[in-house]
Image 1: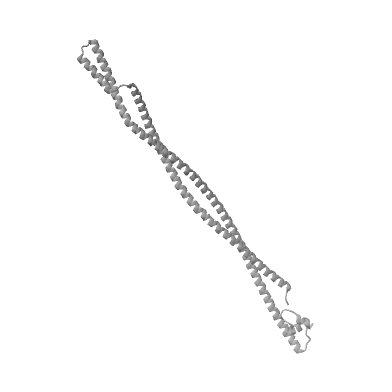
Image 2: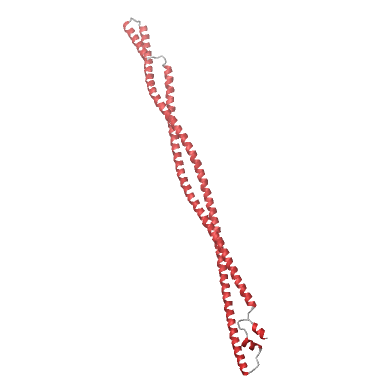
Length: 302
């Protein structure tokens, strides 16, 4: 005879097994989705790392150029100061020359020499008093002094003309250096801007990498948690499968015992029938009834 309560229990176990398997599949699909998200996050992270490497390399290159330009600027400024001092000294010399030229203005060396010779000739050829001769000698002495100063100024003037060419060259060199300094300052300014932009990008990339690492770690924890849930559900499923097998084995054993008992009753009934003894309902059922687990024939006999 069948047991409705046992069948209901078995059906409940089967349903629970089906539900647990669906839960495991749902968790696995969620886990696979998280794994795919991590794969994309890691790919994005690798792209950020490669860009960060490129930015750091570019940052080093630009910084080296920036430092080189600063050193060059420092050297040019020192050279500019040196040339400026040289020009300053030359201007001072030219000022002294102009002052000396003013003092000797109108003193022509050739004309002075002619006058000196004329006075000397007069002394030699003319009859002069002692006082007149002394005056002429004094005049010659004064004129010779003026002649020496005029010659000296003439040499200074000649030297000044030579130095003016050098002065012009120095001023051209100074102008060239100033232009180079201006160009360098422009380059340094541009590189400073580039350095700032690269540093900002580097810091931004580092921050984005930290955020990606945080997301990856969070997703990894969620995947681990899902894996634990899968393992727990698998364990629950194993227990349910064991329970189902145990129930199936129990039903099989119970059915086998029922058949064995029925065979014994059938044998007893057969023996009583042969002896002409009266049979009970159960003996009649054992002898003529349906032994497949229902009592339709027994009911009919009754």
